[in-house]
Length: 98
Image (tube, rainbow, N blue to C red; front, side):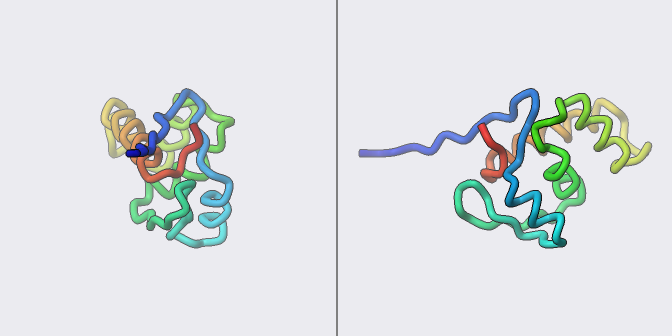
């Protein structure tokens, strides 16, 4: 029998694992995933996005928050694409709840 793991797609209110958020809050950059593996979050945007994606914010809220992290150096359309790609990557890494 061949079992296949299906990873979630980011929904309208993405929610990362509580453990990963707690680990980042304690200064750890290698976090435990929902797949029981560890992953190092090296990019600043990814590390900023994990605690923000707690299920209370929709994508527009996340965009506003991430805009403050990115500053005014990046066009809004490009930042939206990066946000979507980052959320998808967090899902692939096993850091987002379905």
